[in-house]
Image (cartoon, rainbow, N blue to C red; front, top):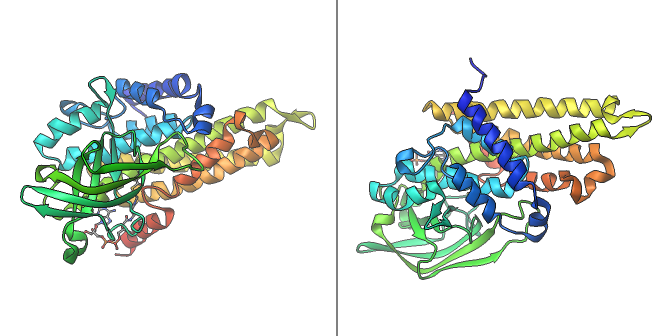
Length: 384
Ligand code: CAA
């Protein structure tokens, strides 16, 4: 067993750390406050090759491994999870799915610019449209319909909670074609946002990741060519599930970054702040908190690495990815609450960042499968 990172992985980690500090930290509080989408930061990520990190260079990607992706996600999420969630969705849910299951024509037309993150000098990213008002955790319960008519499908319905909802140029849309077949009647489609009949709803006013644009997207008689269907007829639900397995590694790494960002701030503060004549980290009450934070974070990191390693080695990573997300998101929530506590009153004001990290942590227990869904995935796997 080798826990040592390679030279390349260390370089990626360093590049992500510098990017987070130099490009994401300035203005992060204002972007959060005013719900400003970090488009400049996303363009810079595209230039770094981080929007298609794991995609084959033949399709516009950087050809890195999943461990590198975890490292980059952790560093960026320490500072700004509104940037890292857009990066995660584009990498895991959009580019990976297209690379694995798309046709050569789909890859040439969509994957290359999506992995590059740019087209004609403009930001070009994707979004993953599975959730609906009545189909969140119960994802087979799709109301959005895709009716086949000759060489195209007509899509009608509403999708909810869509990350990158207005920033994305391309949507991967999950919709039901044959209601008699249950989840085997579901298809996945590539739909360009500017297709007639597609409309983006108002931006959600969220507790956390406020720079990330979350929208409902509706489809009214949207005509999509059959050649834009991903995989065989009826493959859409399996496509969504397989794609989400990798997405869960990304969100686990995001949660890890939120936790380690809050821990680093709490540690630094505990060395500066003095009470009763000594730095507060010398008080056992604080030192024990820091020790517990560090231990939980290291455990979460190992789970993220293991899931990424399994993926890189073509093993079944479904269960480990679910464990990593379940555990890391709980750690993020716990650590950020404790980091606010270590900061005392200062932790409750925005300048110290930990209150934002605490708000951002919550969503990691919800999106890409709630903690309860992760327990279902793990439970089914260990009892079958
Ligand atoms: N990996 C691969 N395949 C899977 C899978 C997984 N993790 N989970 C289920 N499947 C497959 C099953 O093998 C089965 O396939 P076959 O019929 O071909 O054998 C099929 O999917 C149906 O599975 P189930 O019978 O288990 O379906 P279910 O309805 O009982 O439960 C579920 C499925 C696991 C609960 C699923 O609905 C689920 O994961 N729900 C959560 C959805 C989710 O994560 N939503 C997040 C939204 S996306 C998002 O948040 C993105 C964003 O913008 C940030």
